Image (cartoon, rainbow, N blue to C red; front, top):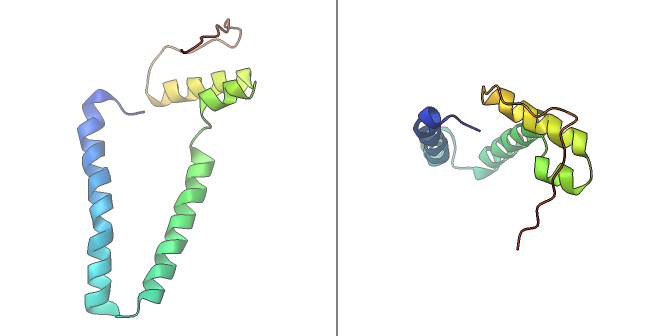
Length: 103
């Protein structure tokens, strides 16, 4: 869902976020406390908040919606992804559905 010119930046941010876990843990044990329980609770709460935010913000998979027979919702999800990617190519609601069989 990222334009090609921004992929390296997004990859760098994701890698920095992944490595920040080790940095936060190290700083916590060095300067705050040797007790792991409070760090674990804080990270569990943060992970829960992030998961709930993703459930609200990220649309459902268009493939899953098509499998469940929710054609209009799948088209809406694809169009919202297209708008996020800043493209002018949108799927009309009355588009023909062609079923492909993957062997």
